[in-house]
Each structure stands twice: as structure tokens, then as C-alpha cells.
Amino acid sequence: MSQLMLRIQCLFSAITLPFLLSAQQDTGFSLLGDEPAERIKVENAFKTSRVVNLQSLELTDAGVLDVKINHRFGAVGLGAYEAFGLDNASVRIGAEYGIVPNLALNLGRSSLNRMVDAGLKYRIMHQTNDNHRPVSLLLYVGAARSAISTSTNKIMDYTGQLIIGRKISDGLSIQLAPSYVSMGRGGETGALGIAMRQKITKRTTFNLEYIPAMVRPMGRAVFRNSLSVGVDIETGGHVFQLHFTNSSGMAEPQFIAYNTDTWSNQGFRFGFNISRVFTVVDPGKFSR
Amino acid sequence: MKNALIIATCLFLFGAVNAQSNEADKSQIFSTSSGTIKFFSKTTAENIDATNNQVKAALDAKTGNVEFSVSINSFLFKKALMQKHFQENYLESEKYPKSTFKGTIANNSVVKYGADGKYPVTVKGKLTMHGVTKDVTISGKVAISGKKAVLSTDFNVLLEDYNIKVPANNASQIAKSIKVTVDCSLQKK
Image 1 (cartoon, rainbow over the protein chains, first blue to last red):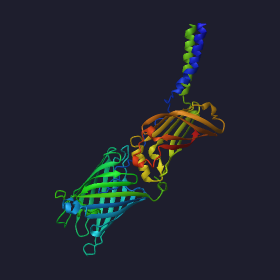
Image 2 (cartoon, chains in turn blue, orange; image 1 turned 30 degrees about the horizontal axis):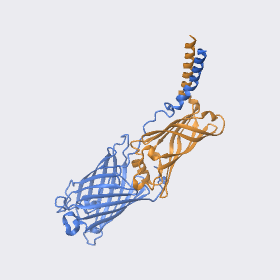
Image 3 (cartoon, rainbow over the protein chains, first blue to last red; image 1 turned 90 degrees about the horizontal axis):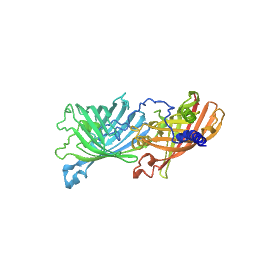
């Protein structure tokens, strides 16, 4: 009798055990095998295409229009009577459009010297997650011209700039931007832009940029290197950039070669950039 | 002696069944690396959809084991900015580049892999996304035609289950529950 019981028990467990095990979802199998690590382009080194004034490692996507409304107020040192600079504003209204992947057109009009600027930004190399390409490299070439009708001003300034940098971690990105400006009013200069951003939260970052001239801009009696600190705040379709800077000009030659304000004498000013992107062409139209 | 024999038989039976479930007979495997997974977020403010046509999937006809692997960055959106935010802020694809599913067709015996037809199935397994793994049970279909097995299903995923946080000021644009549609045509090797 007991042997029969044992046999039944045994049979029962032989039947139920495998089912009990399968109910635990044995996912030890591997049908796809070990997949090789995928090579992915490292994106989002900065929240937008500018650090503050300086071109960043980011480029407007193909088919996307990025409208940028930028303000620089008067120097904080102007005091309470001028509302610490808020009574005066220098404005640049600009737009960037991604023509094809890795190439964007920049246009802008600044109130300072009534300057019109245009440029092309091209991504030569894109950092990858596996360090096959350890850095991103971009080229910016631009021209700017003042519309003030004096004979000396109606000459083009040209800018050539390389932007090389790396997103080191999810939060930290750094870049160098060796720049050359040919000044229409005579002279030229070379500068080395240095910039970084550190995420504070997922959607806010701290940004710093410094653009020391390696060669003092020729023919400039007064010249100061541009230094800006700020934060980026990303909301749905906007990026708000709030900063303090000693540069009231926002077109490349203005902050690289023609800047005259200081930080030390309370010449720094508050400013903001608002970036709003619009999808003009369905991204599916570009093979990405 | 008799007892020992019975125990040995039991162990053998158990072992045999167990071994069978782990064994992958190569001739019974259907697979693809170009399956499609879409998702859809519906709110009154905005509809968001994205498509991934590079889904890797495999099915073992003998055991009913299925496996899916999806590269998060391969989801294409209608707006580049959405794709950026999806990657950087929501799925954090640099930290979690892949989403996977591993499971087993619970009623695999109803699927006649040799005969053309549509078979409703229930799949139980583990869905991993955004670094979080959850046990899920999904109903779907296996459609056999010749050497092809088409796996199709749709199911809903709750963002909070996978620790995907939507900030308050975007909550009106992104649904709490996202509809996922799977359509993968697998080929027998």
C-alpha cells in the first residue's frame, strides 16, 4: 500500500515539477545569442546649438527650423536708474535651418550696429558611444555685415571656426572652438573658445564659455575677451538660456573680435536666448 | 531497491523534460532582424507615434520560447525634437540602449507550425525597458504561412511601471499608458 502511495506521489511530482518550473518562466534560454554592442552616435551634448554665444557641438536637425530670439541688456553697473541695464537691450533675431543631415544654415539680424549675419555649420565627425570616434568635430563659416551706411562699415567680417568636443558623461560636455575672424574694417584675430556644460537636472544645465583672443584683434584700441555663464532650461519645445555675459554682440565677429565690455567694472549684463524649434520637413524624408 | 528505481525514474523523467525545454533545435527557429514595433501615445493635446523597423526577434517552435530585442535609438518620430526628448529624457537610451522581451508561448501546442493558419497565443515572459524588468502576459497571434511566422500583438505599457517619469508640465501631452503594436515577420532558418 505504502509503495503504491509512493509510486503515485512520485508520478505526480514527475508530472507537475516541470510545469511548476515552467510557470516560474525560465528565461535562461538565448535565441538571439550575444548581440554585439551597437555603435550609436552620441547625441545631446548640449541642449541647443549655442552654448551662450558660441556655436556648440549641437546642430539643428535636418528639416527643422530653430528660431532664436536673443536679448542682451545693458550693463548691470548702470545702476538702479537704468534698472541695472534692463532699460537697454541689444537684440538678435535669428533662425537656423537643417538643410540636410549634418548641415545647417544660420541667419540673423542684430540691433547692435544693425548687423546681418549668415553662416553654414557642418558636422564633419560625430562622437560614437564605443569611442570609434571619440570626439565630435564641426565647422562653422560665416559672414557678417553692418547695415549702417558709412563707407567704412559696409564691409564684411568673415568667421571660420572649428568646434571640437566630447560628451564625457551624461551630464558633462566640453568643447574647444579655435576661431579666426577677418575684420572688414581692417585686421584679423584668432581666438580659442572654451566651453562646457554640466547638467543640473535632466532638463536644466549650467553653461560656461570663454573666448580668449590668441592674437589681439588688430586695430582695436579697446578689446576684452568674452566670458559668459548661464543656465539652459528645457521645456517642451523651447530652450530658455539665461546668462550673464560681458558681450552685448551676438553675431560671431562681435563677440570674438569686437567685444569691449569688461566683467570687472560691472560691465557684465544679463541676457537670454529663446530657442523654439519647428519641424518643417518630416524627418523620415532624410535617411538617418 | 524498488524505491531507488522509482526515484531514479522520476529523476530521469524530470531531467528529460527539463532538458527538452532548454534544448534549442536550430531547425525549429524562426527569426528576423527587421521586425516592426510601433507605439502610440494619445492625449487630447497631442498624439505621438514612433516606429522601429529594426526589431530583432526569434521564436523556437519546439519550446515556444520567444525573444525580442529593440534598439531604443532606432525608434523614428515625426518630429526630431520628440525623438531627442524620448532618447535623452524619457528612455535614457545612453544608459539603457535596449529594450528586450523574453518569454514562452504558454499554449504553444495549439500552434501547428507545419500548417498555414492563424493561431491565438498567450505569451508569458519578462519585458525589460528603461532598466526595469517586469513579468508580463500578452495575448497575440502567430500566423504561419510556409516558412514564415508572423507574430502580432498590441498591448499597453504603463510608464510608471518602468520608472519613466513625465514632468508635470508635459503630463497633458504624454499618455500614462502607451499602446505598443508588434508586427514581426519571422523566417525559418
